[in-house]
Amino acid sequence: MSDGEDHHIDGRRARGNKRRAEIIDATLAVVTRDGAAGVTHRTVAKQAGITTSLSTYYFATLDDLLVAALSSVADAYTAHIRQIIDAPGDKLHGLAELIVNSGGPGRERALAERELSTLAARRPALAPVARHWRENVAELASTLTDDPQAIATLVAASDGLCTAILIDNIPADTDYVHRVLCQALGAHHDASTSR
Image 1: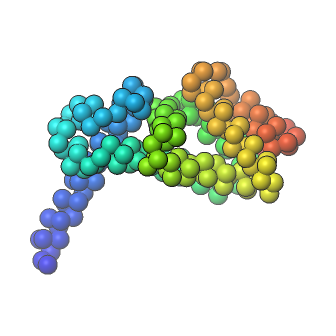
Image 2 (image 1 turned 90 degrees about the horizontal axis):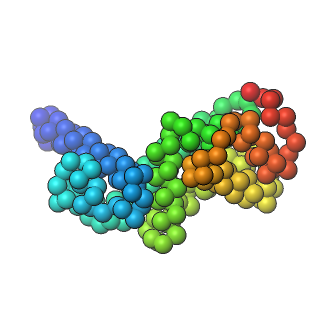
Image 3 (image 1 turned 30 degrees about the horizontal axis):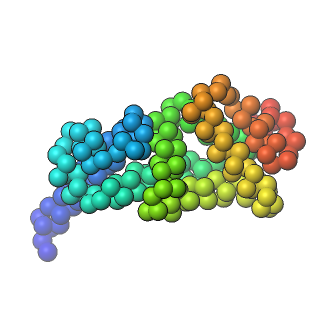
């Protein structure tokens, strides 16, 4: 294969990846606006400004589209969680900041994750991706305690806090969320330490 053919294939692949990313972003926008139940190839294509046949070219089934959308959200949170795990300082406080920030700059993607995770209970194809997200939270929790019950409690607490902040719009700041997570662990940390 010549260099010219290689460049042509690489360019086509880059354009395809860009189109896939645009369709995923459109899917997340539809989920945030209309809920996961509002996602169809037609609504996503309209949001992306493309034809329905082009949407189905990249994602043959609705499950393929929803899995890609939820995976993109999970990947973004995985990266944030990994940064928290690898960073020095109070990892629990880092998780608290991540939860609080989901109500701010990352609100749209966080809302989409909540919607798609809920949908995963009814669409088996989504279940592994939703489980992966919870395993990431559990991985963070395991850096804080070896107690499986405490890990499960922390995961449930963080999940509940995300719901409260996103859906119920409760006012929350990092110190408040940090205290709640510390209580979930059974720890007695001063929320003002380890900044």
